[in-house]
Length: 228
Image (cartoon, rainbow, N blue to C red; front, side, top):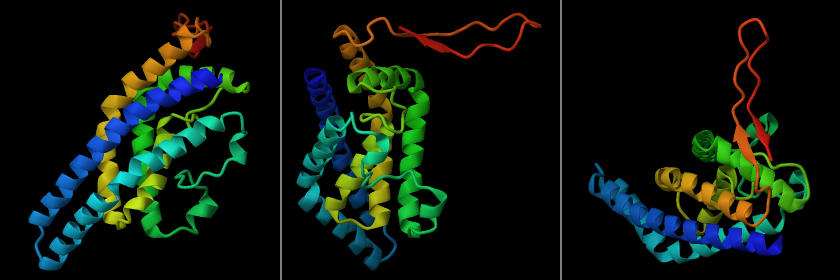
């Protein structure tokens, strides 16, 4: 298990490091573009200051993200409720009443990003959750608790991005850029991780079988099922 998780960590780290560097490069360009288009000197100064902050602090972002990723993978045998979700964005109704509006803006954006990515990759995420359950010796992981799922990646980015010391409007811009980069990356990535685990004997025969609808009068269509 340790070797396989090490392989997952290596693959994920490579993909996310490239992605985050590209996100930061585009982010700096966007900050400068916003400054050029600013309608007042004060607004222009604000965007240029954000760009300067990113140039100075960006070397810390990727290492912080990778540390969080390694921690997520190291804790897969912990029960979901026992882990502290620092920087998380899934909030209960009680918690929603206690956080500031700016935090809610970030939470909403991150929820949207993760939700879109999950919908586009629901099948491979389901299969990966089954395989991570085997690795952890516990029931299958749902998308919310999958250590390399979209929600986890968004939590890690939100937490790691604190090092940039940016205002919320600038953080939201960066998260939107991350969204654009994550969508084309994530599908091939999750398929590759599934294939790697399958080749190494983790539910090698697991596949998703669409069950055909019964003829009219014989009952409703059965849901899709996984077989291994």
